Amino acid sequence: MAEYSDIRTGRHCVLLLHAHLVVTKFLLVNFPPTVALSKLVNSLKGVSSRRMRQEFPELAAHYYRASKLWSGSYFAGSVGGAPLSIVRQYIEQQNRPV
Image: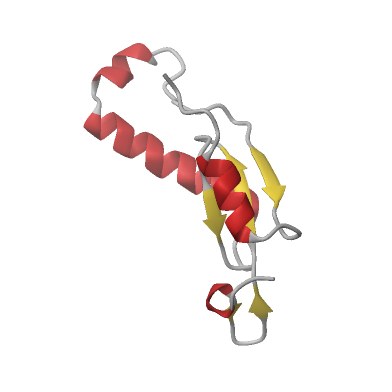
């Protein structure tokens, strides 16, 4: 069961929404029910792409044809049945890139 500190409340709802997003691989996101998952993913991709281009300008030259860093695809899995400690452990123990 989730800890009470993980439960969020809204004006007309009580919620506990988490999704394991495989966009940049190691990502567990807690989000409100007013945000569509597809909008959340697109926002995360846009912000991360913009920040990576600012920090690593050479990426722009590498991806000049497509002019985008991420594909339009993503995977989102509901983690509602598993305790968050187990999900976090699973994410942290995935193989790190070499």
